[in-house]
Length: 144
Image 1 (cartoon, one colour):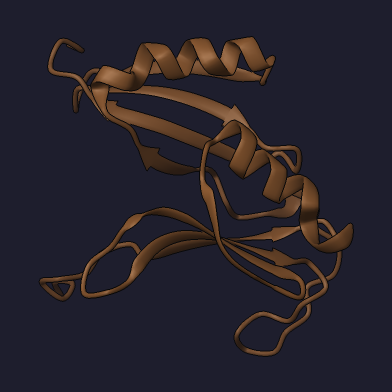
Image 2: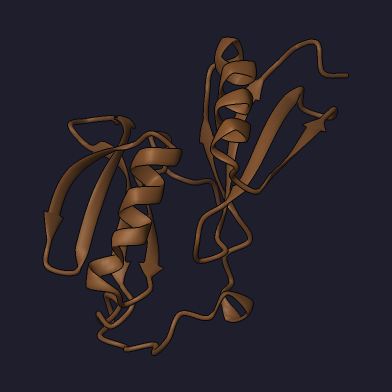
């Protein structure tokens, strides 16, 4: 079965440690990754990634770990080793790759890079304070 023709990724939602509501996460994603706070509610922050499709905004949602999921389940403590999240990726322009790499290195953020030759992607991987891996990826025809 094919997905709907206009299916797009709108949000990635992460559970944040229960310090007032994941302030470390808001600081990391605004100061290190460079996202803007779109809106905050008690225990929830929505950070803007980009303009989306059909009036939606692409976001990263940070949810206090004590909040239930959409089905009402409470999952308890956030434990990186027990999560099913491998990583998530944010696209950057190829022209910004070197500047972003140098900026992140200057911040002292733990990072690694990789070239995905099969698809011409150049990636920077960083870890947030919770241990989630964020990929900043660009298309680069020279990657072979």
